[in-house]
Image (cartoon, helix red, strand yellow):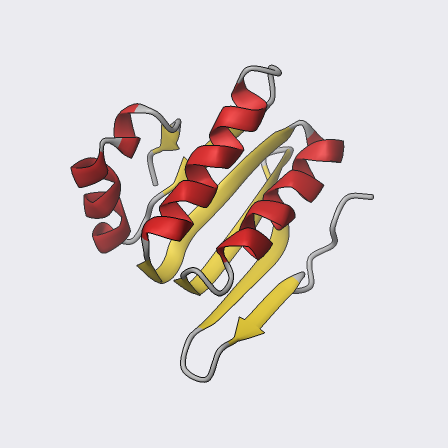
Length: 118
């Protein structure tokens, strides 16, 4: 089942919240992630990506509204890439937030993940 436009994940650990919603842009499913991605919710993000990819086979993860991401969040993105690129799934990422983009650059994930221009 392809996820609908409402928030599919919303987790709060006292201070940090992450939400994932689904939209469609130019015929592609887009997971719109906002808030903070950390060890408390990175597995939920990976699960949301996996669920969407199962049906859509062409998914963009929009990180433009992400305000914080730690190593477990980066690992979730890398794991999603590893699982699906070899299977021919079109999985791309938008790193619209300059802080997130800088972190992807520093860690070298900008050379591993397929990043779309904003």
